[in-house]
Image (tube, rainbow, N blue to C red; front, side):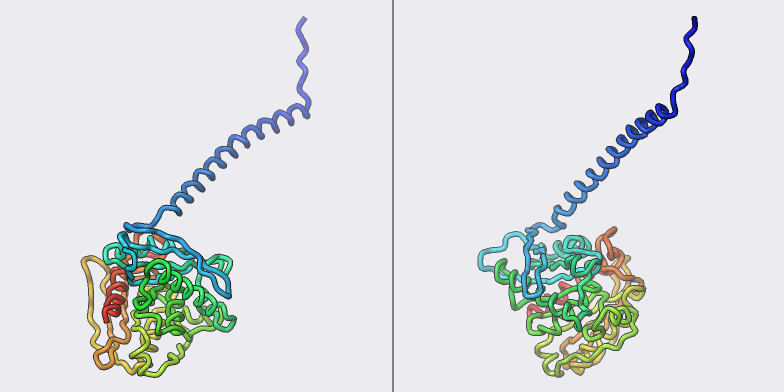
Length: 339
């Protein structure tokens, strides 16, 4: 006698479906988790890998009344006991950190060859979610607090690692360039040169809203709070590098920065010269001089956007087709170190 077929209940079908989906979900979840873990490990290894340049990649923390900031320091190989080397202070832009800025600029490669140290102060994401230096917040005081922490890092490096206190230059990109200019305006006697790449000069903004206007070139830059003789004898000369296609920070700011330095010292513009190396973007260079002394230099790169000129390809805010800004910055600073 044939057995009668008994259809499964809806409850049994539902339970089997749930069990099947659970097993499938677990397989997908395990695969996704493995992918996430693999990617995390890969990123961790990448972050720990030192930037290019034969030498030491050290880390430290600068502390002060307003908190603390981490920094990285590159020391070329073979530094002898008691030896003092020039120090280039590199201030990164928004969405960057010490390592990505070092990778983009490749300043460590030049430092290893020319024998100088490179300090990379690092903004934290608690103080600014985008990693920008708060150079504009002079009303609230954050700008001055961060400047003090950077100066603390410089003091620490010159004291502990052989940096030459008498040969220090400040270099920055975008928000880092604006912070570099603020540093120099507050401590002109501590620096031999300052290089602003795609930044805004001091005295142009004092709050978040005014900073936005300044980025678009809609703010007036105040005169430097210094007498002409002081600018000539005590203030470091300025180099400005700015792209003509910069849509983040208006090129007007580059002109305003050199004009502030030149006007304060009574310097005048010399004849503009064109410079091009190989197939890189051409640049026009204008020096502002007073009695033979260079007070400021403006490097305009018409085809460059908001990016480090001559930087490593595939890095944020980096354009490998531009003239080498790192080489220009070191050449400009080293000339001042020799004087």
